[in-house]
Length: 363
Length: 207
Image (tube, rainbow over all chains, first blue to last red):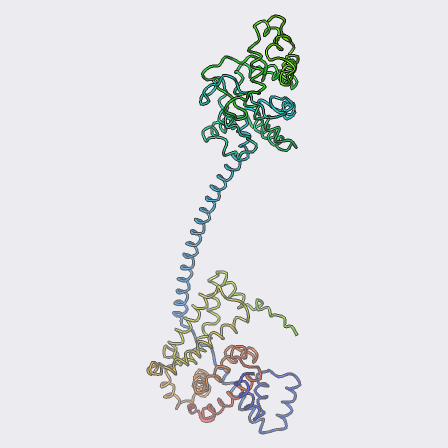
């Protein structure tokens, strides 16, 4: 209770007639009202006081609220109207500012999303761009697995398929497809272990992207799926190496007509046979544009390079021997050459003479 | 015991104020029409100047409108409004005590119209017996008597008789218990009975 409450109540208690006021104001309970009525009936002095208070109450009941001049209402409402207009203008300005900020935010978001998507799609497809030639040539995972069993592309130590005649490395092969990347092959690094951005120069990358994007959606999807399938394989690293080797061999070493012959084969078994045949076909004459293909990155061909040896054997064959050799069935040609190569490597046969014994009767 | 919060939104004036908060200027005009006169009456008793009371009334309603966004129905609108009126009125009285020179030439109530000034009323008081039943005159006598009351008594009387508030509502505004309000009103009435006694008996002006 505040001090004021206490003082007021204490003072009024001394007279003990404040119940009369509550009685007049209708603030008493039924019991209290009955008590006051009883006291009024028995106490003339209290009744006199009641009459006085009642008379005052009658006078007070004549108090009326002041009449308000219309001018006051009008002036107040004018101020309110001004306030409403001010609020409206402020709200409109806020709304415009908000719209502008929202638009800018959306625009920034869209630009960011565009670049992020661009980067994402670029990154996602990078491996596909960089191996597009090989992917196109390989076509299916099962074919790649078959290729990986081939000693020239997959099994064993990385093989050097370098030609004995070294063409200037800064020249493009005359019959290389437009997207082929000699620089990727020329680095000699395992592409699967190297960050993609370090592999291709921007121009090369751009050309490959253009070429990839010009493909039909089905083909793009097919090559993406193939890439993903390779990376999901348990021996993904080996398959990737095979893919790179095969891709480089295919795009750099073969002529356009050889490539077309390979592409014309749809059956996987025939394609494998075609690869084996092409491996043994005489290399086209070296032209200024027909450059060296390096698969291992070694600047000079190693002395025990099987391809170099095989190429040497092929070179040592006479025209007739060569004719007889090429008249063999494809599978026999490949096996024959491999047998010879392994015998040669283990010292079971001479170099060229062994081949002459086997391939031709005439020296 | 946990008290259940009262839902003041059932109060029609509170609903109007909530509509004002939501941006309805017409609802505000309706509230002004309902309360402007009563607020003006209260402030005239605080300021004893109609002009100053009008300025304060306008100021109070404008401030209410400007602060409409922060309005929360924590009490009935009427209680909330009169709490503001009381604060402004008491502030006015405090400032008048500090700077009495500013009010030396203050006009009496009704100086802007009505039945004339206090002097005019006093001059007419000699004719009061002949007009004993003139209610307008009686009203003016009551107003004169009220002005000689202590401001707290006067405030309680006005809330009770102009606004018809019960003890509890008056207590909310004046920060008093209902029992204290009852005592306050009782003493105010006894004092008014003394002041108005000469007028009631002989038609003489109250002192």
